[in-house]
Image 1 (cartoon, rainbow, N blue to C red):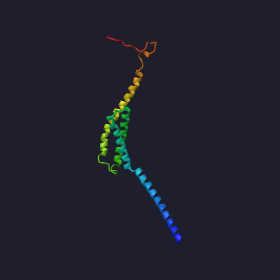
Image 2 (cartoon, rainbow, N blue to C red):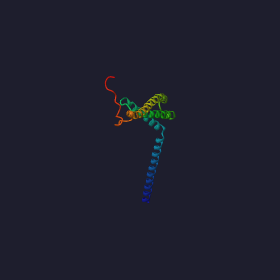
Image 3 (spheres, rainbow, N blue to C red):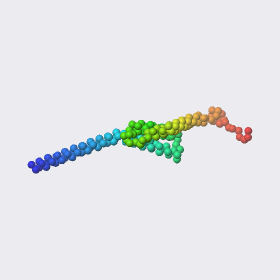
Image 4 (tube, helix red, strand yellow):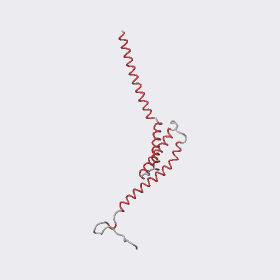
Length: 159
């Protein structure tokens, strides 16, 4: 009888540990799922990404970017700002975002759009100039061969 009681308690103890393990596993999975769906976490990621873009753009003071890089950076910043404003308006109260943050970002959007327009226009102009420069490098009179006498030579000395 003593052995049956010991085996009964042992089995019960083992079952209790198993049940506790399953319960804790389920609890961990549910808490991880909630953290993934948490709007405040998503808002934090949006704002952090926007901050990284701003730091990248502020680095342009030290090292001038190419027009394509600037266009890409300002385009990404404009999209990130629009997404951040939408997320703040939707979840800002719940996530305790500072008052006026959405309005501040909206006021910056006009400057970002202007910078994006200028950078992308400069990139387009550089591409046009490069394409025009490739066609303008052809020698005059159709060639540099021996038949035409090579490139046209300008007279030397006073005219």
